[in-house]
Length: 215
Ligand code: DX5
Ligand code: ZN
Image 1 (cartoon, rainbow, N blue to C red):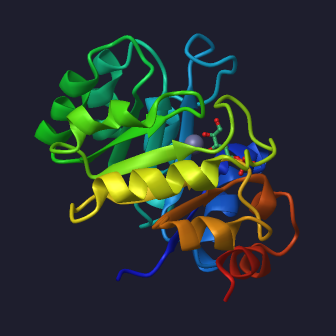
Image 2 (tube, rainbow, N blue to C red):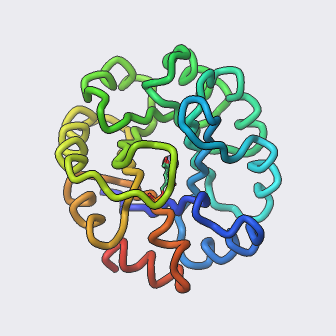
């Protein structure tokens, strides 16, 4: 089994010092950078576009895990791929053609994911299992950092893990992850933990990461 990976979300970083934040989180043991893209329409917040992704691409060699909380989504995928995304995840709840979006991501040579919101029925991921590289299970309502982990997510993680068993698909959990719930997520089958505020709102990123990872 592959080791569990940590994907710090730069949504909680100090934007006025983003280059330094990225270099620090890289040294602190991040496995990839999670980049939350929000459009003020699919979710009630606005964050980054492809230009931001491009501008930080040469600050680290960490893979960029780009979480698109936008709708429409297809028309922006090529720009995010060109900007340096390595993994591009789209939401099942977006009205745009999910399969078309995933196929476009893969045709650009990138890994593709689907994200599922807390209220969305788990079975809705089934039609996409043949074309995805990862599933992001949202453990908060998407839109903002710093929310509390929704406890029901553990059961959802277990069920999704069972659905993707024997496939080459990674399971990522996103939202409210801290050292209190991380081990339950790992035990339930998560491969990647996203964490924003529980890392960037502390003054020792390396220590925060090791507490979350239980190492
Ligand atoms: C929420 C985002 C998350 C968020 C995580 O919509 O997708 O990635 O930034 O932040 P925390 O860890 O603070 O919940
Ligand atoms: Zn996210």
